[in-house]
Length: 98
Image (cartoon, rainbow, N blue to C red):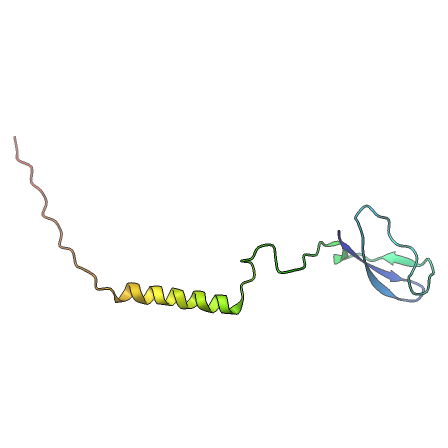
């Protein structure tokens, strides 16, 4: 359900209202009680997602990011410190001619 922005033309009061999309717009201002309220156009009809995110991995903490970076650096330094064995090319096997 989206939030809608409203404004009263009589007193200028502005507020947000959490409503279902199929509900009619509010006509009466909650401050002055006059029927001069109108729904404003704009981003008020957007769906709002609040909370820690849809997935646990969406917003990682700084400590997690630092640990992941340290692990990555550690794995890179380990792969670079290993002595590489130089393999000699195998001699081509010669097939006897018929």
